[in-house]
Length: 277
Image (cartoon, rainbow, N blue to C red; front, side):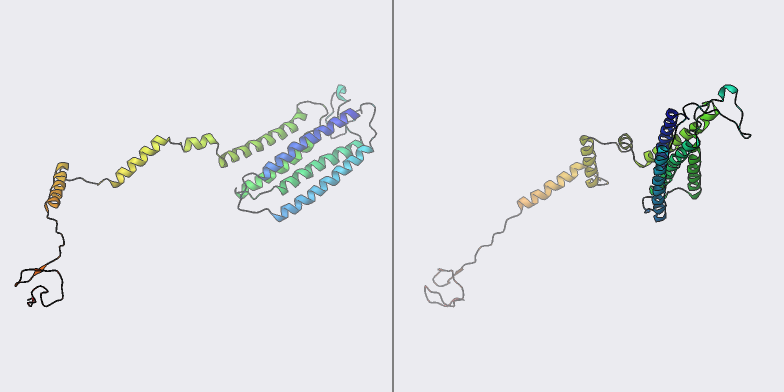
């Protein structure tokens, strides 16, 4: 592989790797059970895989400095387990030397380790059934396997586009599933307005007034309203005609001199001195 082709291959590996890591994170956070805390074992495994990804990245960068790129295309030599292509396809794009293969494998392994590390670190216990959890894990394994061959282009024919096509379909499927689950949890403002319409102030006052009137309204009204008014008038007339009693002081008079006695507790009149009976 020429130097220019080699770096294009590395860009494809890193680009597909970023999509792969983001997809693994979304799979780990799919339908989480918020009442559960993070799994300690998952966090430890994630940390170890991060360290492994760093080590593999460093080794890949080191191998890049040791590469001597060929100056011309490498002739394709088929082995007994490969399909022999036409002679016009013998000179192909993308076949690596041994030194280049070390770099490609180390960078691919680093992205794979980083994807699984993200899965374990962002993992939340799902609220789904156990068999769905198993299917999700198998789906993640298949995504990792397809990622390795998604950037391995040589002839650019139909068969070599199957792996990147499947990889893109699987990543898109995860994206749509995550968006659908979030849409169920978080309602949009339009959905909130449709399910709980906001009433105007006039409607609210009218309903409140009707409720108050209905609350204090008698259930059944017997007789005529005019009869009730007549009874109230009669009661008011009786109250008006009733004499008002006023407390007045009581006075005594002497039967001998006839003068008023306005004091109490005495036995004789102070005017004539006669005894008061």
